[in-house]
Image 1 (cartoon, rainbow over the protein chains, first blue to last red):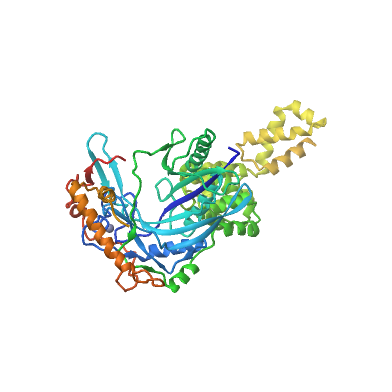
Image 2 (image 1 turned 45 degrees about the horizontal axis):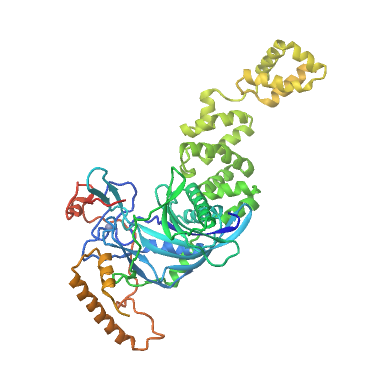
Length: 476
Length: 95
Ligand SMILES: [Zn+2]
Protein backbone atom coordinates (compact mmCIF):
# COMPACT_ATOMS: atom_id res chain seq x y z
CA UNK A 1 0.00 0.00 0.00
CA UNK A 2 2.83 2.39 0.78
CA UNK A 3 3.41 2.84 -2.96
CA UNK A 4 -0.07 4.40 -3.25
CA UNK A 5 -1.89 7.32 -1.74
CA UNK A 6 -5.63 7.54 -1.27
CA UNK A 7 -7.70 10.42 -2.62
CA UNK A 8 -11.04 10.87 -0.88
CA UNK A 9 -13.87 13.32 -1.41
CA UNK A 10 -17.02 13.34 0.69
CA UNK A 11 -20.61 14.22 -0.11
CA UNK A 12 -22.61 14.98 3.00
CA UNK A 13 -26.37 15.35 3.14
CA UNK A 14 -27.60 17.25 6.16
CA UNK A 15 -31.30 17.52 7.01
CA UNK A 16 -32.19 21.05 8.02
CA UNK A 17 -34.10 21.46 11.27
CA UNK A 18 -36.94 23.52 9.88
CA UNK A 19 -40.50 23.07 11.06
CA UNK A 20 -41.83 22.57 7.56
CA UNK A 21 -40.65 21.03 4.32
CA UNK A 22 -38.62 22.95 1.76
CA UNK A 23 -41.39 23.60 -0.77
CA UNK A 24 -44.64 23.03 1.14
CA UNK A 25 -46.12 23.68 4.61
CA UNK A 26 -46.09 20.03 5.73
CA UNK A 27 -44.50 19.28 9.09
CA UNK A 28 -41.04 17.69 9.11
CA UNK A 29 -41.65 15.95 12.44
CA UNK A 30 -39.90 12.60 12.61
CA UNK A 31 -41.62 9.33 13.50
CA UNK A 32 -45.19 10.24 12.64
CA UNK A 33 -47.73 7.81 11.17
CA UNK A 34 -46.88 7.05 7.52
CA UNK A 35 -48.14 9.65 5.06
CA UNK A 36 -49.51 11.95 7.74
CA UNK A 37 -47.11 14.81 6.85
CA UNK A 38 -48.08 15.04 3.19
CA UNK A 39 -49.95 17.39 0.88
CA UNK A 40 -50.61 17.78 -2.85
CA UNK A 41 -47.20 19.45 -3.36
CA UNK A 42 -44.99 16.78 -1.80
CA UNK A 43 -47.05 13.92 -3.21
CA UNK A 44 -46.47 15.36 -6.68
CA UNK A 45 -50.08 16.04 -7.65
CA UNK A 46 -50.49 17.74 -11.01
CA UNK A 47 -50.88 21.51 -11.10
CA UNK A 48 -49.24 22.34 -7.77
CA UNK A 49 -46.42 24.82 -7.29
CA UNK A 50 -43.47 24.65 -4.89
CA UNK A 51 -42.91 27.70 -2.66
CA UNK A 52 -39.53 28.02 -1.00
CA UNK A 53 -39.19 27.95 2.80
CA UNK A 54 -37.35 31.09 3.92
CA UNK A 55 -35.86 29.45 7.00
CA UNK A 56 -34.38 26.61 4.92
CA UNK A 57 -32.58 29.21 2.82
CA UNK A 58 -31.37 31.04 5.92
CA UNK A 59 -29.98 27.83 7.41
CA UNK A 60 -28.20 26.91 4.18
CA UNK A 61 -26.70 30.41 3.97
CA UNK A 62 -25.51 30.14 7.58
CA UNK A 63 -23.68 26.90 6.83
CA UNK A 64 -22.14 28.44 3.74
CA UNK A 65 -20.78 31.34 5.79
CA UNK A 66 -19.62 29.09 8.65
CA UNK A 67 -17.33 27.16 6.31
CA UNK A 68 -16.06 30.26 4.49
CA UNK A 69 -17.99 29.72 1.27
CA UNK A 70 -18.91 32.45 -1.15
CA UNK A 71 -22.69 32.62 -1.03
CA UNK A 72 -23.91 33.22 -4.56
CA UNK A 73 -26.25 36.21 -4.80
CA UNK A 74 -28.19 34.21 -7.38
CA UNK A 75 -28.62 30.44 -7.53
CA UNK A 76 -30.94 28.25 -9.55
CA UNK A 77 -33.02 25.20 -8.69
CA UNK A 78 -32.82 22.33 -11.16
CA UNK A 79 -34.69 19.10 -11.73
CA UNK A 80 -32.73 15.89 -11.30
CA UNK A 81 -34.73 13.32 -13.20
CA UNK A 82 -35.05 9.71 -12.09
CA UNK A 83 -37.76 7.24 -11.36
CA UNK A 84 -38.38 5.87 -7.93
CA UNK A 85 -41.73 5.56 -6.16
CA UNK A 86 -40.57 7.46 -3.09
CA UNK A 87 -39.92 10.43 -5.39
CA UNK A 88 -43.44 10.97 -6.69
CA UNK A 89 -42.69 13.78 -9.16
CA UNK A 90 -40.11 11.56 -10.93
CA UNK A 91 -37.58 14.32 -10.32
CA UNK A 92 -35.84 15.73 -7.30
CA UNK A 93 -35.59 19.49 -6.97
CA UNK A 94 -31.93 20.22 -6.42
CA UNK A 95 -29.33 22.74 -7.56
CA UNK A 96 -26.86 21.96 -10.28
CA UNK A 97 -25.01 24.57 -12.34
CA UNK A 98 -25.55 27.44 -9.93
CA UNK A 99 -25.44 26.19 -6.32
CA UNK A 100 -26.17 28.36 -3.29
CA UNK A 101 -22.58 28.48 -2.04
CA UNK A 102 -19.11 27.58 -3.31
CA UNK A 103 -15.36 27.64 -2.59
CA UNK A 104 -15.36 27.08 1.16
CA UNK A 105 -12.89 25.40 3.47
CA UNK A 106 -12.71 23.57 6.75
CA UNK A 107 -9.74 23.09 9.03
CA UNK A 108 -9.23 19.64 10.49
CA UNK A 109 -6.68 18.13 12.86
CA UNK A 110 -5.59 14.51 12.79
CA UNK A 111 -2.92 13.16 15.15
CA UNK A 112 -1.76 16.71 15.82
CA UNK A 113 -1.44 17.63 12.13
CA UNK A 114 -3.59 20.50 10.87
CA UNK A 115 -4.89 20.57 7.35
CA UNK A 116 -7.41 22.60 5.38
CA UNK A 117 -9.98 20.73 3.32
CA UNK A 118 -11.65 22.53 0.44
CA UNK A 119 -15.41 22.62 0.17
CA UNK A 120 -16.45 22.63 -3.45
CA UNK A 121 -20.06 23.61 -3.01
CA UNK A 122 -23.15 23.58 -0.82
CA UNK A 123 -26.48 23.26 -2.52
CA UNK A 124 -30.08 22.94 -1.40
CA UNK A 125 -32.36 20.08 -2.32
CA UNK A 126 -35.36 18.07 -1.17
CA UNK A 127 -35.20 14.67 0.50
CA UNK A 128 -36.97 11.59 -0.88
CA UNK A 129 -39.48 9.38 0.94
CA UNK A 130 -39.10 5.85 2.22
CA UNK A 131 -40.20 2.52 0.82
CA UNK A 132 -40.70 -0.80 2.51
CA UNK A 133 -40.51 -3.81 0.22
CA UNK A 134 -42.76 -6.78 0.90
CA UNK A 135 -40.91 -10.08 1.21
CA UNK A 136 -43.90 -12.16 0.15
CA UNK A 137 -46.04 -10.10 -2.22
CA UNK A 138 -45.25 -8.11 -5.33
CA UNK A 139 -45.71 -4.90 -3.37
CA UNK A 140 -43.77 -1.95 -2.04
CA UNK A 141 -45.18 0.37 0.59
CA UNK A 142 -44.36 4.04 0.16
CA UNK A 143 -44.29 6.63 2.96
CA UNK A 144 -43.87 10.22 1.76
CA UNK A 145 -43.44 11.90 5.17
CA UNK A 146 -39.77 12.58 4.45
CA UNK A 147 -40.37 13.63 0.83
CA UNK A 148 -39.54 17.32 0.58
CA UNK A 149 -37.68 17.64 3.89
CA UNK A 150 -34.97 20.26 3.25
CA UNK A 151 -31.41 19.05 2.77
CA UNK A 152 -28.13 20.69 2.07
CA UNK A 153 -25.52 18.69 0.23
CA UNK A 154 -21.98 19.64 1.16
CA UNK A 155 -19.40 18.44 -1.34
CA UNK A 156 -15.72 18.41 -0.39
CA UNK A 157 -12.73 18.70 -2.68
CA UNK A 158 -10.80 15.43 -3.05
CA UNK A 159 -8.35 16.73 -0.42
CA UNK A 160 -8.63 13.91 2.09
CA UNK A 161 -5.88 11.28 2.15
CA UNK A 162 -6.93 8.75 4.78
CA UNK A 163 -9.89 7.31 6.64
CA UNK A 164 -8.72 9.24 9.72
CA UNK A 165 -8.85 12.52 7.83
CA UNK A 166 -12.27 11.68 6.39
CA UNK A 167 -13.67 11.03 9.86
CA UNK A 168 -12.03 14.18 11.29
CA UNK A 169 -13.60 16.22 8.47
CA UNK A 170 -17.03 14.68 9.05
CA UNK A 171 -16.86 15.27 12.79
CA UNK A 172 -15.84 18.89 12.29
CA UNK A 173 -18.61 19.44 9.76
CA UNK A 174 -21.21 17.78 11.96
CA UNK A 175 -20.13 19.82 14.98
CA UNK A 176 -20.61 23.05 13.02
CA UNK A 177 -24.09 22.02 11.83
CA UNK A 178 -25.08 21.19 15.39
CA UNK A 179 -23.56 24.42 16.79
CA UNK A 180 -25.51 26.42 14.22
CA UNK A 181 -28.62 24.55 15.39
CA UNK A 182 -29.58 23.89 11.79
CA UNK A 183 -29.24 20.07 11.81
CA UNK A 184 -29.54 17.55 14.65
CA UNK A 185 -26.57 15.60 13.28
CA UNK A 186 -28.13 12.22 13.97
CA UNK A 187 -26.37 9.70 11.72
CA UNK A 188 -28.44 6.69 12.74
CA UNK A 189 -31.73 8.40 11.94
CA UNK A 190 -30.22 9.70 8.71
CA UNK A 191 -30.28 13.43 9.35
CA UNK A 192 -26.53 13.49 8.67
CA UNK A 193 -25.54 11.15 5.83
CA UNK A 194 -22.32 10.63 3.96
CA UNK A 195 -21.16 9.12 0.67
CA UNK A 196 -17.45 8.74 0.03
CA UNK A 197 -15.62 8.87 -3.30
CA UNK A 198 -12.44 6.87 -2.93
CA UNK A 199 -9.61 6.33 -5.38
CA UNK A 200 -5.91 5.62 -5.09
CA UNK A 201 -2.92 6.63 -7.20
CA UNK A 202 0.81 6.00 -7.12
CA UNK A 203 2.43 8.30 -4.56
CA UNK A 204 3.46 11.55 -6.19
CA UNK A 205 1.20 11.10 -9.21
CA UNK A 206 -0.97 14.06 -10.16
CA UNK A 207 -3.59 12.24 -12.15
CA UNK A 208 -6.53 10.85 -10.20
CA UNK A 209 -7.29 7.14 -10.20
CA UNK A 210 -10.69 5.66 -11.00
CA UNK A 211 -12.99 6.15 -8.05
CA UNK A 212 -15.61 4.08 -6.33
CA UNK A 213 -18.53 5.75 -4.59
CA UNK A 214 -19.26 4.22 -1.19
CA UNK A 215 -22.75 4.31 0.26
CA UNK A 216 -24.55 3.11 3.40
CA UNK A 217 -22.09 4.71 5.79
CA UNK A 218 -24.28 5.55 8.76
CA UNK A 219 -21.77 5.99 11.55
CA UNK A 220 -18.28 7.43 11.85
CA UNK A 221 -17.03 3.91 12.51
CA UNK A 222 -18.59 2.62 9.30
CA UNK A 223 -17.11 5.50 7.31
CA UNK A 224 -13.67 4.66 8.67
CA UNK A 225 -13.95 0.92 8.10
CA UNK A 226 -15.43 1.23 4.61
CA UNK A 227 -12.74 3.66 3.42
CA UNK A 228 -9.90 1.57 4.87
CA UNK A 229 -11.30 -1.54 3.24
CA UNK A 230 -11.80 0.20 -0.07
CA UNK A 231 -8.26 1.60 -0.15
CA UNK A 232 -6.74 -1.84 0.42
CA UNK A 233 -9.13 -3.45 -2.07
CA UNK A 234 -8.10 -1.02 -4.79
CA UNK A 235 -4.40 -1.41 -3.93
CA UNK A 236 -4.65 -5.17 -4.31
CA UNK A 237 -6.31 -4.73 -7.72
CA UNK A 238 -3.57 -2.36 -8.95
CA UNK A 239 -0.74 -4.52 -7.60
CA UNK A 240 -2.25 -7.47 -9.44
CA UNK A 241 -2.31 -5.41 -12.63
CA UNK A 242 -6.10 -5.16 -12.67
CA UNK A 243 -8.23 -2.07 -13.02
CA UNK A 244 -10.54 -0.31 -10.59
CA UNK A 245 -14.05 0.03 -12.01
CA UNK A 246 -15.96 3.26 -11.57
CA UNK A 247 -19.01 2.12 -9.64
CA UNK A 248 -21.16 2.50 -6.56
CA UNK A 249 -20.37 0.14 -3.71
CA UNK A 250 -22.40 -0.56 -0.58
CA UNK A 251 -20.76 -1.02 2.79
CA UNK A 252 -21.70 -4.39 4.27
CA UNK A 253 -21.83 -3.66 7.98
CA UNK A 254 -21.65 -7.29 9.12
CA UNK A 255 -18.75 -8.33 6.93
CA UNK A 256 -16.93 -4.99 7.09
CA UNK A 257 -16.43 -4.94 3.31
CA UNK A 258 -17.74 -2.95 0.35
CA UNK A 259 -19.83 -4.72 -2.26
CA UNK A 260 -20.47 -3.64 -5.83
CA UNK A 261 -24.02 -2.54 -6.66
CA UNK A 262 -23.37 -3.47 -10.27
CA UNK A 263 -26.48 -4.68 -12.03
CA UNK A 264 -28.76 -3.15 -9.43
CA UNK A 265 -28.17 0.32 -10.73
CA UNK A 266 -28.28 1.62 -14.27
CA UNK A 267 -25.87 4.19 -15.52
CA UNK A 268 -27.18 7.53 -14.26
CA UNK A 269 -28.40 10.09 -16.68
CA UNK A 270 -30.22 12.62 -14.57
CA UNK A 271 -30.84 15.11 -17.40
CA UNK A 272 -30.69 18.13 -15.09
CA UNK A 273 -32.48 21.24 -16.26
CA UNK A 274 -33.58 24.44 -14.52
CA UNK A 275 -36.90 23.98 -12.73
CA UNK A 276 -39.40 26.26 -14.46
CA UNK A 277 -41.63 26.20 -11.35
CA UNK A 278 -39.08 28.14 -9.31
CA UNK A 279 -37.57 31.52 -10.05
CA UNK A 280 -33.85 31.96 -9.40
CA UNK A 281 -33.03 32.28 -5.71
CA UNK A 282 -31.74 35.76 -4.95
CA UNK A 283 -29.89 36.26 -1.69
CA UNK A 284 -30.26 39.88 -0.62
CA UNK A 285 -27.22 41.50 1.00
CA UNK A 286 -29.33 42.19 4.12
CA UNK A 287 -30.14 38.49 4.53
CA UNK A 288 -26.49 37.63 4.11
CA UNK A 289 -25.47 40.19 6.73
CA UNK A 290 -28.19 39.01 9.15
CA UNK A 291 -27.05 35.43 8.83
CA UNK A 292 -23.41 36.41 9.29
CA UNK A 293 -24.30 38.15 12.56
CA UNK A 294 -26.29 35.15 13.79
CA UNK A 295 -23.39 32.71 13.64
CA UNK A 296 -22.41 31.73 17.17
CA UNK A 297 -18.97 30.80 18.45
CA UNK A 298 -18.06 27.67 16.46
CA UNK A 299 -16.51 24.49 17.88
CA UNK A 300 -12.88 25.18 16.96
CA UNK A 301 -13.02 28.69 18.43
CA UNK A 302 -14.74 27.40 21.54
CA UNK A 303 -12.11 24.69 21.97
CA UNK A 304 -9.35 27.31 21.80
CA UNK A 305 -11.19 29.47 24.33
CA UNK A 306 -11.67 26.53 26.74
CA UNK A 307 -7.89 26.05 26.71
CA UNK A 308 -7.03 29.70 27.35
CA UNK A 309 -9.96 30.79 29.53
CA UNK A 310 -10.31 27.68 31.70
CA UNK A 311 -6.78 26.29 31.44
CA UNK A 312 -8.05 22.90 30.27
CA UNK A 313 -5.76 20.42 28.52
CA UNK A 314 -6.32 20.22 24.76
CA UNK A 315 -7.83 16.73 24.85
CA UNK A 316 -10.39 17.75 27.47
CA UNK A 317 -11.27 20.96 25.60
CA UNK A 318 -11.73 18.97 22.42
CA UNK A 319 -14.03 16.38 23.97
CA UNK A 320 -16.07 18.99 25.83
CA UNK A 321 -16.62 21.16 22.75
CA UNK A 322 -17.28 18.36 20.24
CA UNK A 323 -20.96 18.47 21.21
CA UNK A 324 -22.48 21.87 21.75
CA UNK A 325 -24.73 20.76 24.57
CA UNK A 326 -21.84 19.18 26.48
CA UNK A 327 -19.86 22.42 26.19
CA UNK A 328 -22.94 24.33 27.38
CA UNK A 329 -23.26 21.89 30.29
CA UNK A 330 -19.62 22.46 31.25
CA UNK A 331 -19.97 26.24 31.17
CA UNK A 332 -23.21 26.16 33.16
CA UNK A 333 -21.63 23.96 35.84
CA UNK A 334 -18.46 26.09 35.90
CA UNK A 335 -20.51 29.23 36.49
CA UNK A 336 -22.03 27.59 39.58
CA UNK A 337 -18.80 25.96 40.74
CA UNK A 338 -15.86 27.96 39.40
CA UNK A 339 -13.23 25.24 39.37
CA UNK A 340 -13.10 24.31 35.68
CA UNK A 341 -10.56 21.52 36.02
CA UNK A 342 -12.62 19.67 38.63
CA UNK A 343 -15.86 20.20 36.71
CA UNK A 344 -14.19 18.95 33.54
CA UNK A 345 -12.85 15.83 35.27
CA UNK A 346 -16.26 14.93 36.65
CA UNK A 347 -17.96 15.50 33.31
CA UNK A 348 -15.41 13.53 31.31
CA UNK A 349 -15.34 10.56 33.66
CA UNK A 350 -18.63 10.24 35.47
CA UNK A 351 -21.15 12.23 33.46
CA UNK A 352 -20.08 10.90 30.05
CA UNK A 353 -20.19 7.34 31.37
CA UNK A 354 -23.78 7.78 32.55
CA UNK A 355 -24.83 9.63 29.39
CA UNK A 356 -23.38 6.91 27.18
CA UNK A 357 -24.99 4.15 29.21
CA UNK A 358 -28.37 5.86 29.10
CA UNK A 359 -27.86 6.94 25.45
CA UNK A 360 -28.81 10.45 26.53
CA UNK A 361 -27.53 13.79 25.27
CA UNK A 362 -26.04 16.25 27.74
CA UNK A 363 -28.93 18.66 27.15
CA UNK A 364 -31.33 16.01 28.50
CA UNK A 365 -29.10 14.91 31.37
CA UNK A 366 -31.20 14.15 34.45
CA UNK A 367 -28.14 15.09 36.50
CA UNK A 368 -28.11 18.82 35.91
CA UNK A 369 -25.21 21.29 36.16
CA UNK A 370 -26.88 22.40 39.43
CA UNK A 371 -26.65 18.83 40.77
CA UNK A 372 -22.98 18.56 39.81
CA UNK A 373 -22.13 21.89 41.44
CA UNK A 374 -24.01 20.86 44.57
CA UNK A 375 -22.17 17.53 44.70
CA UNK A 376 -18.76 19.16 44.39
CA UNK A 377 -19.71 21.70 47.04
CA UNK A 378 -20.66 18.89 49.42
CA UNK A 379 -17.20 17.35 49.02
CA UNK A 380 -15.53 20.69 49.75
CA UNK A 381 -17.58 21.27 52.89
CA UNK A 382 -16.66 17.82 54.16
CA UNK A 383 -20.26 16.66 54.13
CA UNK A 384 -19.37 13.69 51.96
CA UNK A 385 -16.13 12.10 50.80
CA UNK A 386 -15.32 12.12 47.10
CA UNK A 387 -15.69 8.38 47.21
CA UNK A 388 -19.29 8.73 48.33
CA UNK A 389 -19.80 11.40 45.70
CA UNK A 390 -18.66 8.97 42.99
CA UNK A 391 -20.88 6.33 44.52
CA UNK A 392 -24.09 8.39 44.50
CA UNK A 393 -23.44 9.97 41.09
CA UNK A 394 -25.39 7.23 39.23
CA UNK A 395 -28.22 7.52 41.79
CA UNK A 396 -28.60 11.22 41.13
CA UNK A 397 -28.49 10.49 37.41
CA UNK A 398 -31.23 7.86 37.50
CA UNK A 399 -33.51 9.39 40.12
CA UNK A 400 -33.05 13.11 39.36
CA UNK A 401 -33.07 13.63 43.12
CA UNK A 402 -30.60 16.18 44.44
CA UNK A 403 -27.32 14.87 45.90
CA UNK A 404 -28.36 16.34 49.26
CA UNK A 405 -31.58 14.34 49.22
CA UNK A 406 -29.82 11.10 48.35
CA UNK A 407 -27.16 11.52 51.00
CA UNK A 408 -29.84 12.13 53.60
CA UNK A 409 -32.07 9.31 52.42
CA UNK A 410 -29.23 6.79 52.41
CA UNK A 411 -27.54 8.13 55.51
CA UNK A 412 -24.26 8.61 53.66
CA UNK A 413 -23.13 11.83 55.22
CA UNK A 414 -19.49 11.78 56.14
CA UNK A 415 -18.73 10.92 59.75
CA UNK A 416 -16.76 13.84 61.07
CA UNK A 417 -17.75 13.30 64.66
CA UNK A 418 -14.56 12.68 66.63
CA UNK A 419 -16.27 10.60 69.30
CA UNK A 420 -17.83 8.20 66.84
CA UNK A 421 -14.66 7.80 64.80
CA UNK A 422 -12.49 7.40 67.87
CA UNK A 423 -14.53 4.37 68.91
CA UNK A 424 -14.06 2.81 65.48
CA UNK A 425 -10.33 3.55 65.46
CA UNK A 426 -9.95 2.02 68.91
CA UNK A 427 -11.71 -1.15 67.88
CA UNK A 428 -9.52 -1.50 64.77
CA UNK A 429 -6.31 -1.00 66.75
CA UNK A 430 -7.39 -3.51 69.41
CA UNK A 431 -8.27 -6.08 66.77
CA UNK A 432 -4.84 -5.77 65.08
CA UNK A 433 -2.15 -5.83 67.79
CA UNK A 434 0.53 -7.24 65.47
CA UNK A 435 0.18 -4.41 62.99
CA UNK A 436 0.17 -1.86 65.82
CA UNK A 437 3.43 -3.35 67.06
CA UNK A 438 4.97 -3.29 63.58
CA UNK A 439 3.88 0.32 63.04
CA UNK A 440 5.45 1.41 66.30
CA UNK A 441 8.73 -0.25 65.34
CA UNK A 442 8.87 1.85 62.17
CA UNK A 443 6.63 0.25 59.51
CA UNK A 444 4.73 3.50 58.96
CA UNK A 445 3.41 2.21 55.64
CA UNK A 446 0.80 0.38 57.71
CA UNK A 447 -1.01 3.67 58.08
CA UNK A 448 -2.85 2.89 54.86
CA UNK A 449 -3.95 -0.45 56.28
CA UNK A 450 -5.49 1.16 59.37
CA UNK A 451 -7.25 3.87 57.39
CA UNK A 452 -8.58 1.26 54.99
CA UNK A 453 -9.99 -0.80 57.87
CA UNK A 454 -11.74 2.23 59.34
CA UNK A 455 -13.15 3.14 55.96
CA UNK A 456 -14.43 -0.37 55.48
CA UNK A 457 -16.14 -0.43 58.80
CA UNK A 458 -17.76 2.95 58.14
CA UNK A 459 -18.70 2.07 54.55
CA UNK A 460 -16.50 4.84 53.28
CA UNK A 461 -18.26 7.52 55.24
CA UNK A 462 -15.47 8.40 57.64
CA UNK A 463 -13.77 11.72 57.07
CA UNK A 464 -10.35 10.51 55.86
CA UNK A 465 -8.40 13.49 57.24
CA UNK A 466 -9.89 13.00 60.67
CA UNK A 467 -9.23 9.25 60.60
CA UNK A 468 -5.58 9.89 59.75
CA UNK A 469 -5.26 12.37 62.54
CA UNK A 470 -6.87 10.07 65.13
CA UNK A 471 -4.71 7.07 64.21
CA UNK A 472 -1.54 9.14 64.38
CA UNK A 473 -2.51 10.42 67.82
CA UNK A 474 -3.30 6.95 69.13
CA UNK A 475 -0.11 5.37 67.83
CA UNK A 476 2.34 8.00 68.97
CA UNK B 1 -25.35 17.56 -33.86
CA UNK B 2 -27.99 15.09 -34.89
CA UNK B 3 -30.07 12.53 -33.07
CA UNK B 4 -29.84 8.92 -34.22
CA UNK B 5 -32.58 6.36 -33.70
CA UNK B 6 -30.34 4.86 -30.99
CA UNK B 7 -30.34 8.19 -29.17
CA UNK B 8 -34.11 8.39 -29.47
CA UNK B 9 -34.46 4.82 -28.16
CA UNK B 10 -32.21 5.69 -25.21
CA UNK B 11 -34.26 8.75 -24.31
CA UNK B 12 -37.43 6.66 -24.56
CA UNK B 13 -35.81 4.11 -22.23
CA UNK B 14 -34.92 6.80 -19.69
CA UNK B 15 -38.56 7.86 -19.71
CA UNK B 16 -39.65 4.22 -19.28
CA UNK B 17 -41.35 4.27 -22.68
CA UNK B 18 -41.26 1.45 -25.17
CA UNK B 19 -42.41 2.84 -28.53
CA UNK B 20 -42.71 0.80 -31.71
CA UNK B 21 -39.64 0.97 -34.04
CA UNK B 22 -41.38 3.20 -36.61
CA UNK B 23 -42.28 5.62 -33.82
CA UNK B 24 -38.59 5.74 -32.78
CA UNK B 25 -37.66 6.81 -36.31
CA UNK B 26 -40.42 9.41 -36.31
CA UNK B 27 -39.29 10.82 -32.93
CA UNK B 28 -35.65 10.94 -34.04
CA UNK B 29 -36.72 12.96 -37.10
CA UNK B 30 -38.77 15.32 -34.93
CA UNK B 31 -35.86 15.77 -32.51
CA UNK B 32 -33.66 16.70 -35.46
CA UNK B 33 -36.21 19.21 -36.73
CA UNK B 34 -36.22 20.91 -33.34
CA UNK B 35 -32.42 20.91 -33.17
CA UNK B 36 -32.22 22.40 -36.67
CA UNK B 37 -34.46 25.22 -35.52
CA UNK B 38 -32.27 25.74 -32.43
CA UNK B 39 -29.29 25.83 -34.74
CA UNK B 40 -30.90 28.75 -36.48
CA UNK B 41 -31.27 30.57 -33.15
CA UNK B 42 -27.64 29.76 -32.45
CA UNK B 43 -26.63 31.95 -35.37
CA UNK B 44 -27.36 34.93 -33.12
CA UNK B 45 -24.37 36.25 -31.25
CA UNK B 46 -25.35 35.90 -27.55
CA UNK B 47 -21.92 36.40 -26.05
CA UNK B 48 -22.13 38.62 -22.98
CA UNK B 49 -25.85 37.97 -22.52
CA UNK B 50 -26.92 36.22 -19.31
CA UNK B 51 -28.73 32.92 -19.88
CA UNK B 52 -32.45 33.25 -19.24
CA UNK B 53 -33.56 30.62 -16.73
CA UNK B 54 -37.12 31.78 -16.59
CA UNK B 55 -39.25 34.33 -18.42
CA UNK B 56 -40.79 35.21 -15.04
CA UNK B 57 -39.22 38.42 -13.82
CA UNK B 58 -40.41 38.65 -10.22
CA UNK B 59 -38.01 38.00 -7.37
CA UNK B 60 -37.68 35.02 -5.10
CA UNK B 61 -40.91 34.31 -3.27
CA UNK B 62 -40.48 32.92 0.22
CA UNK B 63 -42.90 31.13 2.49
CA UNK B 64 -42.77 31.38 6.29
CA UNK B 65 -41.78 28.22 8.13
CA UNK B 66 -45.22 27.55 9.57
CA UNK B 67 -46.98 24.20 9.56
CA UNK B 68 -50.26 24.06 7.70
CA UNK B 69 -52.32 20.96 7.06
CA UNK B 70 -54.98 21.38 4.46
CA UNK B 71 -55.77 17.80 3.50
CA UNK B 72 -56.27 14.67 5.56
CA UNK B 73 -54.31 11.50 4.95
CA UNK B 74 -57.51 9.85 3.71
CA UNK B 75 -57.96 12.54 1.07
CA UNK B 76 -54.38 12.20 -0.15
CA UNK B 77 -54.32 8.43 -0.16
CA UNK B 78 -57.72 8.56 -1.86
CA UNK B 79 -56.05 9.30 -5.18
CA UNK B 80 -53.80 6.25 -5.01
CA UNK B 81 -54.57 3.22 -7.19
CA UNK B 82 -53.80 1.03 -4.18
CA UNK B 83 -53.46 1.79 -0.47
CA UNK B 84 -53.94 0.09 2.88
CA UNK B 85 -54.97 3.32 4.55
CA UNK B 86 -51.38 4.00 5.66
CA UNK B 87 -49.15 3.59 2.64
CA UNK B 88 -49.20 4.16 -1.09
CA UNK B 89 -48.85 0.65 -2.50
CA UNK B 90 -46.92 0.17 -5.74
CA UNK B 91 -45.60 -2.88 -7.60
CA UNK B 92 -42.56 -4.17 -5.74
CA UNK B 93 -39.34 -2.35 -6.52
CA UNK B 94 -35.99 -3.95 -5.79
CA UNK B 95 -34.55 -2.00 -2.89
ZN1 LIG C 1 -46.31 18.70 1.60
